Structures are given as C-alpha cells and as structure tokens.
Length: 596
Image (cartoon, rainbow, N blue to C red; front, side, top):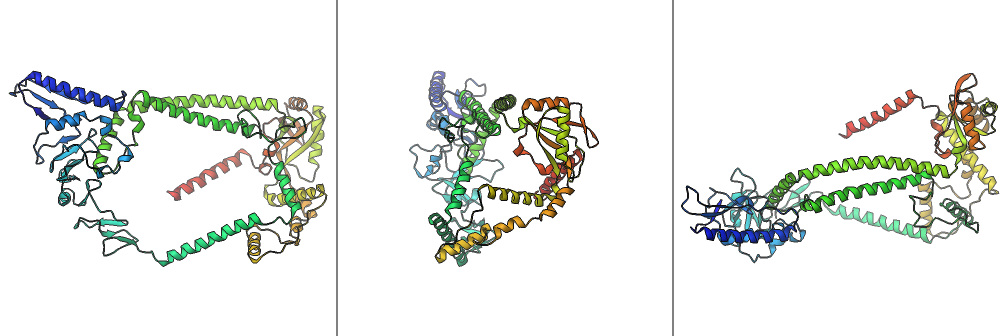
C-alpha cells in the first residue's frame, strides 16, 4: 500500500476519496461502454490502532505499476500522479490497436509517473503506453532478481546491468533490446550496436558484425535468368495457341457440339428447345443433375448455417456478457513489457470468463447434435420426395443375389431371363450378368473402348480424317512438336488411330477370354414397368432355383446404372472386405509410423 496523504481531517479524506471514485467511474464507464467494466479497488482505512493519523490508501493491485519495496527506491508516489493513473480509462490503458505499434516515437504530453532506477512489476492493469522519463528513457527487464515481469527505467549504458543480452537502447520502442541481425545466433554484447558475434548455420560473419548467406553468389542471378527465360517462353506459347488458326474445322465443330451436349439443360419449352438453367437457379430446390447434386448443395447450406449458428452464439456471449470476449487472444503484443501485461491480462480474463467458454461448448455441442439429427431427417425426406417425383432406370431394375458360378461359354443371360419370366409371369426387357473379370480388366476395358469407337464411327457416317498440316513458322513448329510429345498426340497421316483398335487381342483370343470368365453371385434384370418389377420381387421372396443353386432372390436397390462398379463384383465376400479393410488400415499405420 502506498500512502497518498496524512491529514487528520476525516472530512478531507472523504472528499478526496469521492473525487477519485467519480473520476474513476467516468473513466471506466466511457471505456467499457457499460458492459463488464473492470473494477478498481479503492479502500479507505482510518483509525488504525498503530497509526497516529488517518491515511488514504490505493490498492496497489489496481495500479499500472506495483511498487517493489526493497529494490533501491522507497519514494512514494505523489497524489497528482496517482490521480492521473486512477483517472485513466481502463480500456485505453489496455488497448490493443495496431496503430500504436510505433507509438513511442511521439513524445507524451503527460509527465511520467515512473522514476529512474525504480524496479516495478507489471500486471494486468499496467498501461502498455507508459513511457520512462526523458532522463532514463528505456524500459529494461530486471534479471537481477528472482521475480518475473519486473522492469526499470534506465539509461542506455545501464541496460546490460539489468539483462546482459539486451544492451542496446531502442529510442523508437523505448526499451532495452538485443541486436537485430538476420541470421544471427549470438549477439555481440560488448557493444551497444546491432552486431553479431556468432551466425547461424549457412551464414558467415563479416567485419561489420552482419551475417550474410554463405551460399549467395552470381549463380543465383543465372538461375533467376533461366526461370525468366522459361516464363517468357510459356507466355509466348500460350499467346501462340490463342492466335493459332483452326486447321480442322470439322473436328472442332464436332468437339464443340459434344461439349454443348454435356451442359445441363431444362425441359423443352413451347418451341421445343431445351434452354440452359438460369444463373440464379435455386439448387436447394431444383434438380439440375439428379438428387445427389441437390443433396450436396443442401449439405453446403447446412454447413454455412451451422457456422453462422456458432458465430452468433459467440457474438451474443461477447455482446451481452463481457466485451473482453471480442478481443481475448487478439490483442497487441510486442516488447517484453507489453507481453507481460498482455499475458497477465489474458490469464486473469480467461479465468474470470471460463464459465462462458464452458457454456459456449455445451450450447454448440448440443445444438450441433440436434441440428445433425434434423439435417439427416431432412436429407432423407428430400431424397424420397425427389425419387417419388422422378422415374429413373433404377425404378425398373432388380438385382439378382445368390447366383452360382457359371462359365461364360453358356448363355447365362438368356437362361436367367427365361427362368425369371417363367415364375414371375412378367416380361423381362434384359439381363446383365455381373461377370468376375477383375483379373482381365485392362484387356476387356480396352476392347470395349475400341468397340465403342467403331460404333460411333458408323453412327456419324464414317471416320473423321485429319487435315494436312499448314505451313508454320519455326517457333510454331517447335511448339507443335512439343505439344505432340507432352500430350501424346499422333502424327498427322499416320495409322495410329486405327492401330489403337488393333492393339487389343484379336477376336478369337477375346472370345476365348470371355468364354473363360465366370459369373459373380449377382446380376441385374430390367422389367417393363415398376409394377412388374415389384410383382416379380414378391413372387421371388421365398427364393428360386437356377443352375442347381437354391435360395436365389430379387432385391430392389437405390443405385443408378452409371454408379455400378462392375469390376468389383465377385470380390465382395465378407472375408475379402475384412482383408481389404485391414490392408487399408495397415498402409495408414505404416505411413504414420514413418511420418512420425
């Protein structure tokens, strides 16, 4: 406690106390804005048995600097200085505005209440903007005692006596600091300049005390020049492709037509044209590319809504409970003294408002759980509604489960079709067997691609012939050859396009391969109507026999034909799934082991 006055008149003490309270109240109210202002403890003690006079005392926990008794200075703070400190608004004293980053370059208009050589410990109520007197303008962290966050106002020659590694007085920051040299490992504390004693690895120390990159040299300019030349070449290449004339208009038109067909369009209008969807189509309500796309955008909206909910909860806590929640963890940091004040304020504020964080977590956790449940129900209802309103391929298809393994040389599709028609009484449009061809995936995929190319050639009335190469300048010709190499383009006039279809097995070899395939336990059957499909599923509820296997059933499913992974059929037994799952986790663990 620092005594402020020692007059016998109790009336004078009460008047002085009232003045201090009024000044503090106005300062605190203007700074805190009426929400969660910090309390300033002022206590009046009178009539002590061991004292001959009444003394007005100010609790040192609320002062910006706490006087440290026994550190060489027992001078009491004056009444005028204490009044100035008490009247300073709390929020200004603890401001975190980055515009004050270089605040010490401007002289203060108020006299400093700090004294040269007096060590004081800062706390959460200390003023970051305090300045030392002009006679000793530098804050030095006192490392001569066993306490922490103690600072003293000293002259530059005395900086090293407080903390040997901070021997430089920075007039701009108003603190004693160590050297600022790029690549420095240990500063030269024998001088009060920015000089290094030992540099970091990869740097070399020069005579001026600076650290320079050891491997710097002219080679860096050569490398930069190479990259600059490559950049110019890329720019010229892009510009050449932009201005390059179209040499094969027929192929270009066909490519543009195919690209146009890939665009999502609305239903036909009165003129028979299918226009594009408007830019502002509500994808939460309108099916543009099936129910999956609609559910995906519902998920995006739900994610945004959840984030807004979390932010709104925190805003309410900060606005109606304590405005310190707005700035907690974001306030300005800088010098050692500022950091001590910041850490002390942050710790005290965090402990005081810990209940708000716990409440926030409870609200967010419970709210997130309830919203997830509501979101799941909404997505299910949305999909069911879309599925009810739109008929797709899956509404006419059933999946056959439990088929035996049959060789591909037998007409399995025709036999299964006749079997299902016989016991269901419904006409079957077609049957697709899920063959087990994983071991021959590459050959079969290549043959299917070649067959599709041949069918497309017949459909468009003949193959498109490549145009002859036009005359090109040397630069464009070089770019053309580079493009052929990078993108694997065929030479004009070569037979590579026709050779693609001949690279696979010959017809006899492919037929032999197909005859050797065996069926997987599953197949797909297409009916004429949805009612016919449902009737067949009911009649096969008890199972039917096929190729000596009993208990074969029909199941409906939600997958569309383009989502079926045909190559995976025949390798989905519980044992194989468990092995694949174990292998996946094994690879992840193996990677984490070496990553750690």
